[in-house]
Length: 344
Image 1 (cartoon, rainbow, N blue to C red):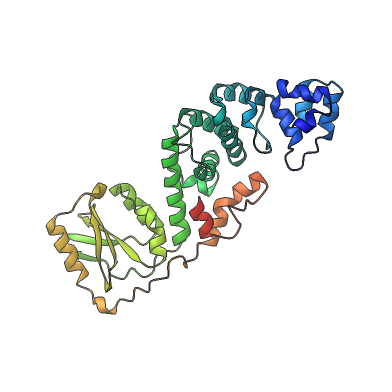
Image 2: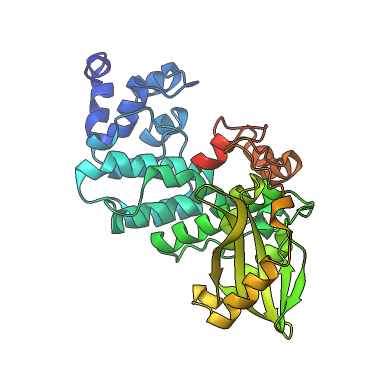
């Protein structure tokens, strides 16, 4: 910046009038040729004309020079955005670089409204809530919240709104990711081998949860975390069952191996809201379990990480985003990737 300012007095004046512009011309973003903007500076053209030639929004003049530590990427502009973002500038200069980075990232990954929202939330609680690693998932969720014609939108239980606090958004985005993972792990076909057979014991029905719809309905009704079991089920490490009495759900049961025992056993058994179940219900479940010849059950566990994700669902989920953004990001590749899913 010093070397550039020494080329002409009018360029040096940018250090006071619009430091962001001087920085953008000294450290241009990829694809920007600063020559045209520099010529306008030397010709004495209005500051707004020069900023437009360098793709630098005028609202950046409100930020201190300390904010600019990396090339300035394309940022939202426009009268409404300028009025909104002006309410959320960081007060401490040392927070300005991180603030600008998260605003730019969310603007690119989601939309300008989400960028204003993250600017506000960063200022509210910069140290605790706004973690850069969360921004991709939150931005995807915020973007799909406004895309009602997409499959990914259908999987959102709580949509992004600009009045949300960061903690609420993180929780809603992670819930959405759990549902996505369930679909990608299980696919559209039901689980063919539930290890055991449905049965009726001591007035209780044992009903298989062998599909995404069945698991989701059980999770909603029983207020538990069954949506997070996709990875486990895909690797054949467990099976889920619903226990009902007179058609009413009373408990959820998980079968799996434990320790070195090669046979399936009841490893989780909970009522609504993960409440404990009665001794009588445990006894009915044990009777149902031992109605089967457990020695003949081949659980066929997969090695962790080897179960493929459903390709058709992966493409159906992300294609609208790729088309809208006109690119396929490295972090959201066209081929199904457990690494990419886990990184969200």
